[in-house]
Image (cartoon, rainbow, N blue to C red; front, side, top):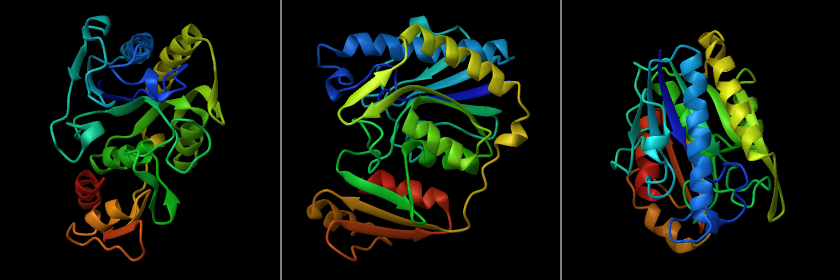
Length: 265
């Protein structure tokens, strides 16, 4: 069994402030360690379920957060960013049996995390076909294009609810709840245990139950915090700026959407 794992940091247990997610801040090391432990736990759960190969994408900020030596030997790790439009799920293809997302977080426009955002801090919200979009949804759709079902997600309660709304068969572990500028987190060791058990259980479930049906058409709307960002984005081929701060884009091909987001955001 071959597994793809994408790991972010804002949805890791205990993370409550941006200072805990940036390499140049004193709080970063503690949560880098927890991110690594949660990813390792997911890998160990996958191995228990029969995985022989796991490709891990370090998908937070610099792409240089995970401590490779603390991951199981069955893993390969993608660090930094290639520049490919798949971004947080770089190298995913139809050779993978399932995908797992660890440390994911609420979308820009949600009130369920003090670190809620979608790809960029410049974005007020991103919608596809009128629905608020998280990084989870962007990457779950990308996996679906490649024929890979997302079977497990960990992160804050907001992203877990979004995952369930897409397909309630997806196994989730909510490690924290956002309340205003605060978070209420479960114990870090409990999170590690629940992630390991949850991944193992998900991978022992019929993967057909996790299928995501992609829309026939993608109508994208991005509202930026500053009108100048929307003005610049409107020059991407096919993009429009119907009102200040808003960029729209339409396509029948989801890869076109990913390529547009890579250049506009």
